[in-house]
Amino acid sequence: MEKFTVLKGVAAPLPLVNVDTDAIMPKQFLKTIKRTGLGSAVMFDMRYDDSGAEKPDFVLNQQPYRNAKILIAGANFGCGSSREHAPWGLLDFGFRCIVAPSFADIFYNNCFKNGILCITLPQADVDQLTAKAQGGNTKGGEFVVDLAAKTIIAPDGVVTKFDIDDTRRHNLLNGLDDIGLTLQQLDKIKTFEAKQKAEQPWLYA
Image (cartoon, rainbow, N blue to C red; front, side, top):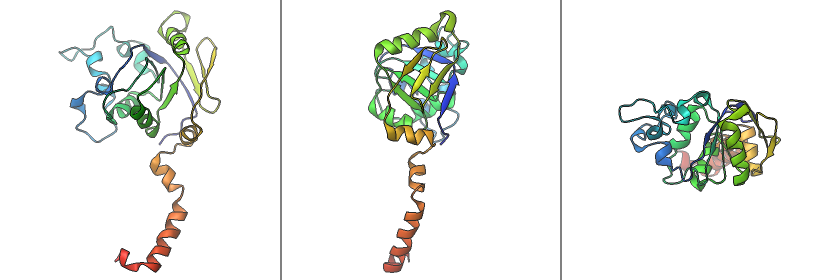
């Protein structure tokens, strides 16, 4: 998993509440088990009309948000079913960070396991960041998310602090998913297996 230290990029505003995983990644795209190639399907029904043409009024079809790395969303983002394709698609689109007042638990956990930082902030702070992402002198400006410092720096220089669980922070900073965490104990695993093989060889026959 790619390490997350400092992320610099455009933030796309999506101030909608209760955006569920079916909206993020519709069911017709769940046939694949690959984590790549799903970026074009993210928010499919919001991005495209019935003919497959882009809807020009949707934020991810507009510049500069086509290349956004940060998503500023509404409350209860990622609710609904527990499909892991949702964070896969968001990551493939280019998002490494999602900011919202609240997240659905399973989606929140899946994001961290796939290298996406989810930041929970009070509604007032999210509203301010949304406004800066939407327009005025800060539209298209670069946001900076510093995980080590636990800060978001808006294009106008205003700093917003956030809290995050220390274990999740450590794992992202070091690029550790569940497999990576397990491999950190590889020496202990090998020692255990050697001891067990000597004492219970029939298990390895």
